[in-house]
Length: 293
Image (cartoon, rainbow, N blue to C red; front, side):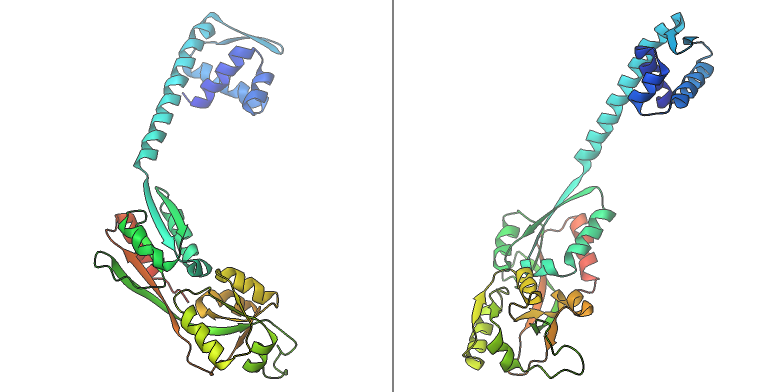
């Protein structure tokens, strides 16, 4: 005996019309008819008297209607209980990521993990790297992915990746191979320089830029994705890690300009945790085994 037979029988019995039952259950009328026939064959009793479009319950049908309702109620209750049990069995994993790393492949890795681990609910926070120690120590997150190493002995830190900075400029009339070489000095004269979107190196980088290009005009922007958008729109230039402009480089949306005026810092990515759960271990292994460039 199948649930769909019982549901079709209950609705058809209540409205005394197979066509109306099919509309309520969003099934075809022949499907309702087949379900009733299969149920009657299984029970070896006739449940309905057929009189053209109208149907009425037989005495056996009236008796079985209360039984069918009870069966469906018990089954619905059982389904809800198992769903509640499964929900209680779900685990939760909280991750904090630096704003800069949101522009890398890391969000895609977290998404893949969520698809592979449906029992685990993920909570993703975006916060500056210097706030991550406090979040870990307070138990607000289990994994932190940032740009600064941790100096707290209670926190385990692993260096994940190094990404070189590149001078990124808008596309212009000298983009093809036959065009003139782009001069760094001209770029700093022509465009404003976007800064303060890489908290770990921006202060020292700003001093170097001012020292070598005293005429540079600066605009402070705290988020790297806004810097990328502004550069694509031809509004300025900046230094960005190779790891966050990987897609734009492949699609030819930027000019990556050779820069030799001073040595550019390397942007390092760190993974931090204290007591890793089984789920946290799996996610960290996935991130550590991936190529972040």
